[in-house]
Image (cartoon, each protein chain N blue to C red):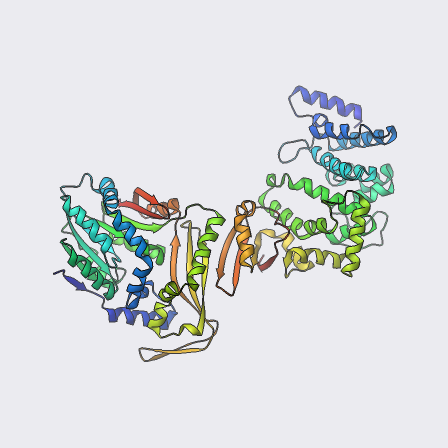
Length: 313
Length: 320
């Protein structure tokens, strides 16, 4: 489908009162943001935006909003933070291979080059072999992401921005998916965000330096070591295998905490208190244990450490 | 002189306690209210008692307006199940009789010590009453009284002092179902949750956590251990909070975990407790008003009215 055809379709859909992807606030904001870029870069980004609009077309989110607001929202975030063209392009394209049957990783490499191709490929789920690194055999989704992040830190920054945007609409997902997304965020992305100083670093170099310093300090080398370190930041007694089990079946998990102060903080936090069910709370002056399950997904404040109490399929 | 009928004596209660403990390591809640337990219970709940007695007219009006307004010419039995020292009940019955109601008071308690306290309360008043020393969940009581109290047009069963929350709920509700007849009233005093939030739940938990360190409260908690001859130093007390979905209630259970091998002799039989053995002590419940209402409505009771003051609530039901 050409851009012209797509615009015709958009005009047609306008007649029936459907919200047009092209007219969303996100698209308008993005265009305004890149207004002052040099002509060549601006035109390039606009052409990528058109490509994204063409392929995501009239796809809808669970909320009924045009799907396009998500990739454009992520692109706005990374552009505002880093002003990096390749990263912004990758943000616009980051879901295209997953969600559009007519676009392959190879298409992205060929059309947008190796850098963007690798960025998009690395954040795309369900891919087993890297297009440019067929010899690399990493099955685990998170380890695969970390392996790529070690090559190009922008992959981790893109994934964090993607998750940040997805969390805004987490409540529109089914309960099971909410819990799963919340768990993965807590286990991987919240600690990663902290390590990369995501909130405070406003350049890719700054985050990269933070990451390298961290790896050196903690003597971490392999993606598996890094993944397990990240998980341990939030949860007690959970290794990579357990993470996989839990991720696949988050609803069956009973969490436990052994600190009364943590229990108190969870109860006082309305956001958390509303989305968990305590199964059992027991204590005396020397010992304390509280077990609970999540009703729906939520991200646990990063300074709370939880431990898996029981797990059953 | 107040007549006293004894179905279960103090010895029966102790024998029952020993036997249940030997067989199932279960402590019945009534064990808390015999011997020194009776005295300890009132030292803990004196404030509540005084609040009730200070506003007795309000409670009387609550009962009168909602249950008795069209029944002035009818006679009824005012039966307190687990009457304790019966001070609250005596006050209400005094007001009923003073206001021309044809009623007679029956106080039922499994503890001989409580019955003695109730006798003293009745002695100070001029009400027409009778005391029954019995476990009202027992077969003996059921045989004698399930079809009893029939000299009256209807009956008002009361469960004051929040002790409803101590016992197994479905069992108790079924007993009440069998004991009551169409048109009988049920008046229950219970603890209710102010808000169903984790924050409030946590505050309740913290409150019971403090009980473990409070000498007076701890002394009440270990009452049954003393009756069984288990030394408090041989274990640790903890409190457990569990949400009961079927009732929408919070259940708090104080538990004693044995940490040192303990050998006791009950009725010439040896009971050996090893480290890790757990004994449930006192159970307390905090209800959600709607949950409790629904629980009794499912058992053929019609909700009549409730009166809530802070964390205490009075509920009135009528048997269909």
